[in-house]
View 1 (cartoon, rainbow, N blue to C red):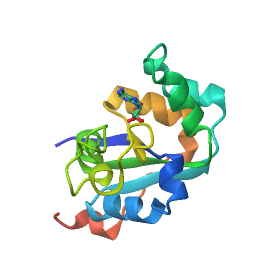
View 2 (cartoon, rainbow, N blue to C red; view 1 turned 90 degrees about the vertical axis):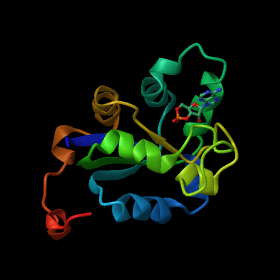
View 3 (cartoon, rainbow, N blue to C red; view 1 turned 180 degrees about the vertical axis):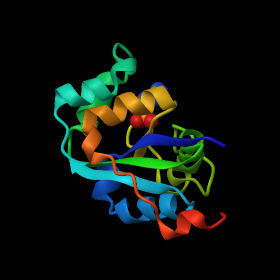
View 4 (cartoon, rainbow, N blue to C red; view 1 turned 30 degrees about the vertical axis):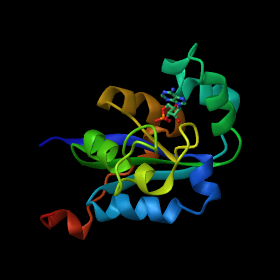
Length: 150
Ligand code: CMP
């Protein structure tokens, strides 16, 4: 099992709806570790860098406009196979299709306002976290629960 770091962002709808605590709690209860965390109000330039792979797609402008409409909560999450584990925790991109029990499946209905974003690969996670965090904002620390078996 590989310890990985992934990038996660609670979108403006998640913040507006008061879901920050619920989402972080689900991530922590799974056994994953928060190693960086901040609230950010993205400008257009940073939002376009975050979503550069979607540039030119029909939903790009709406997506950038939405993620710049209010503050987001950015975090770096660490744990065994963190990239795929977090993707399963958040559920399918379209909340209407996301399984109950996932974050999007439990809280969302709208494809753009789908509450949360997470990187889909280790490489992408590195790129996305670099948009929000400098290296010295990523902490290495041990929790007492790290020695427990989940
Ligand atoms: P996210 O995981 O943040 O990555 C890109 C986002 O684009 C996605 O979640 C959705 O919120 C948004 N989006 C809007 N329309 C589409 C679409 N047709 N296909 C994929 N993503 C879409």
